[in-house]
Image 1 (cartoon, rainbow, N blue to C red):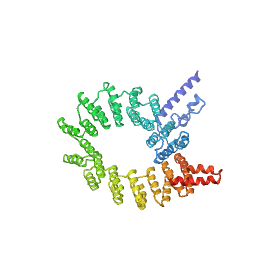
Image 2: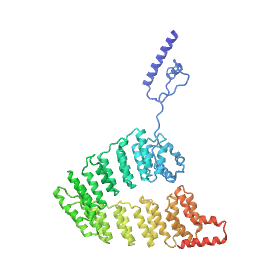
Image 3: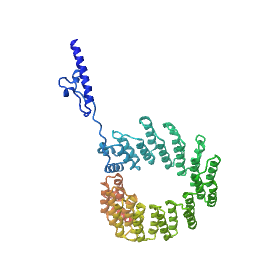
Image 4: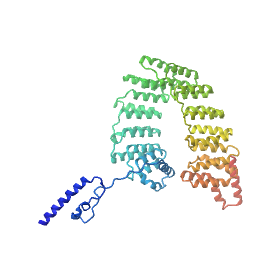
Length: 561
């Protein structure tokens, strides 16, 4: 008994010393605590209870994944692009990036792979295996948008069920707005409506804002009939507002049904909704698009009696209507009225007038209007300059086109691919190859990296010029080195020109380079470059000399045609 009591007292003292050490030594939370290290007169506490060594009382904190670098994001995007087929072992290629996986990295990659639905989904599932990636509602929203763009709708509903059943956060209505848009872009309006009805299955009670968003997306894709039918079914379950009818009025106007648009507007008045400027503008636009400009102008004059003051959008409706009817005089008459009331048109209204002036070859008025835009602090956009550039390129006005590009740069308006494609095509057509090289070399300094369409302009243009086959091959090789898959038509055109001129060895050189590419799309296009010649060469090895002559004649006839 005495021995047991002594052991009990000894244990109580050990526990007391342990708690004192925990309170007095917070600076070393991850160090294993042992009484023998500070009180040598007492044996370690674990010796009384177990023969196993003591484990640390607090595990070291997990280290956060390193911040993603642009190089990591670029390399992962390249892998997803190159290994997009179902049989590709994408996980093996992604394995070096496993320690770097984080939520930020995954979301950045997903935002840049919107056209790679299958690969993006595989990447998402692979990344979920690692603790660095904790999916958020934003992660799922981005992936759902990607899958919707590639029409992988069953996968979308699987993801939604997963979030509902397994994740700690709730779904938000914004996710369903993304689904509505995906179905509408896929021309599946009834599926978009069914998605609205399925919101309750995922714990979301549809609101009037959700209904408005669905109606807007349906009307935007010219599904005004389906939008109207659904609205008529549910309008007594909600409280339709002036916004509801405005969306439907504009939707009917966009498909030229101005009569039905007027009926919807009258129903809005019957329900006692207070008409505002957007509602009036939607009816005016519907009437103008339906060809009833005079009736629209009559309603425009009645706006004042309803206490409505026309805004810039109101006037722009008439300007666009007159420009579409090629009535420049009436368009400028409306513009002059806006000037008197100090109402500034937006850039889209100015662009409409610029286009009409260019179509009527009034280029001097174009530049006067461009100066007016700058004076009124309406910065011309790329579309504005491209409209004028198209006129200069059509008339082969090299100097004026190049001066316009310089003006764009001075005004900090960056050219886009349409700008460069038009200009390069014109310069090659008129034989200004020195300017072509100058322009090409300046692209990177301006922050523009040529896409496949710009390479196609260069290659196709040089193939049409005598003695420029070598230049065409050079840009084709640059495109392959950059990992940009060429158009199939580009491969066919280049192959036929090489065959026609007898450069059969060059075909093998280009095809070999394509087969060594990391892009699976480029490797598959190598077969197009080798083409019929490769298949015929295999047969020719076991055929007679007569078959060789037939192949030569066939190749020449293909080129001539």
